[in-house]
Each structure stands twice: as C-alpha cells, then as structure tokens.
Image (cartoon, rainbow, N blue to C red; front, side, top):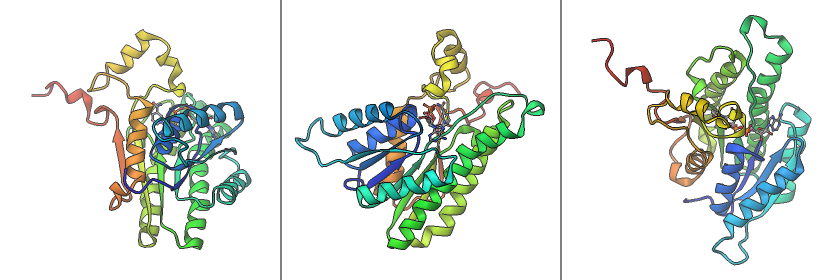
Length: 269
Ligand code: NAD
C-alpha cells in the first residue's frame, strides 16, 4: 500500500491476536515495527520472527527493522520510556497503533472501582497517553503521522456486564474524533478500527468450543467471526497514503454486526 515503506510503526499489545497481525502486515508493507509487549519477551520475539519472515519472503535481505519494546500501557512512565526508546533506536515514529486492550465480566452493581479503573487505565487512558507521546514527537519534529485506535463494535453497541469496556471504547471513539480535529492541520491523521467478534485469545471462552462459537456466529449477519488478518488489512489501509484524506473516522469491520441484525428478516410489518 502507498506510503508505508520505510515508515516506523509502534503497535501496542503486539504479541497476540489483532496486534500481532497488524505488526506482521505492516512489516509486510515495508514498515519498521516496534512490537510492544507487557511481560513476555518470548511472545514479542515470536511476533518479530513471523513479521520478518513474511516481510522478507520474496525480497532477499529486506530492509525492515524490528524492535521488541517492553511497556505496560497503564503506566505513564513506561509509555514515555517506550516511545523514547522507539525514536532513539529506530530513528522516528510515524504510525501508532493503539491496540492493547483488556476486558472483564461483572454485573455493574458489583463492579469495584479498582476493576473499573484497571480497564479504563489500559484501554482508554493508556491509548491517550501513547497518542500524546507520539503526537508530541510529531509536532516537535514537524512530521506528519498516523494514529489508529483499535476500538470495538462496543464503541456504539452497549454491552451489559462489560460497562467499563463499553465506556472505554465509547470514549475511544470520541478521542479519535477530538484528536483528529485538533491535529488535522498538522498532517496528523487519527482514525479507528472497530472489530466485531474476532478469533483471538481475548475470546477463548468461545473460540475453543465449536458449539459456543456457532452460537456467537448465529448473531452475525455474515454468519462467521472475523480474523485478525482482516482487522490488520483495514489498519494497514488507514495507516497508508491510500487513506490520505481520511481522518476522525472509525471503520467497523464486523460482518454486519452493527446493522441491527434483528432486522435481517422482516418482523414488524
Ligand atoms: P488479545 O488478548 O490477543 O490482545 C490484547 C493484547 O493487549 C495482548 O497482547 C495483551 O498482552 C496486551 N495488553 C493487555 N494489557 C496490556 C498492558 N497493560 N500493556 C501492554 N499491553 C497490554 O485480544 P485481541 O482480540 O487481539 O485484542 C486487541 C484489541 O482488539 C483490544 O483492544 C480489544 O478490545 C480489541 N477488540 C477485539 C475484539 C475481538 O473480538 N477479538 C473485538 C473488538 C475489539
């Protein structure tokens, strides 16, 4: 895709699922990749190996560089160190993918403030702080850049028992628009992707049980869950110059989940 070769991208939570797929896809497109991991360097090395293998499958000695970078996105000083390390080691930072995310299930009337803060701290506050540090660098260097926030269909679909997750993704949608407007005239584009039900470790409660997976998929108009690679393709498009005139948008990649699936068959006439 246009404009990705030679750019440097930092992907948070890049050791599994959607983040790993985005890291691999961006490397394939010729980006240098900084692979953020929280606690497991072996998983980051695995992402690195897969990405370089894919990126170099048809080019002898391809020039893609990669850097595993530790950091807990709920910790402000970790984020500052992580962004500085990427810039010092890889020379710049052009693309931030705010992918790290967590969820937990609890009735709202029983949800403790610690648990509420923990989800918001990673999914929303962490994403904001990563964006802030990236934008600081871009503004100081007078560089253009791209931020992609990995949101969710729950940016707009309320999700009972997951109130902090829903709030975090709803907030992320507003953050995408606000930052996009604030930095549009400096060449910094901010967009989101909103996956529907996707086969990744966050969903192992149903991806590892064919019956439960069929139940989930029965609610999806296209009749199947999505893949991390499908999410990565959309992220790569939005990060590339093919999307040069797109900012402040969240692209829903959900097999039709946000289309009021109950209206697929007429029931109200
Ligand atoms: P996943 O569990 O495989 O990935 C989440 C990643 O975030 C993991 O690599 C994890 O280590 C990392 N992470 C968690 N806390 C972190 C922290 N404090 N600091 C740094 N990294 C941290 O699940 P996934 O499905 O690939 O999720 C990726 C993103 O996609 C999340 O933001 C999630 O909300 C979003 N999403 C997923 C789905 C889905 O169905 N899988 C649907 C909508 C949105």
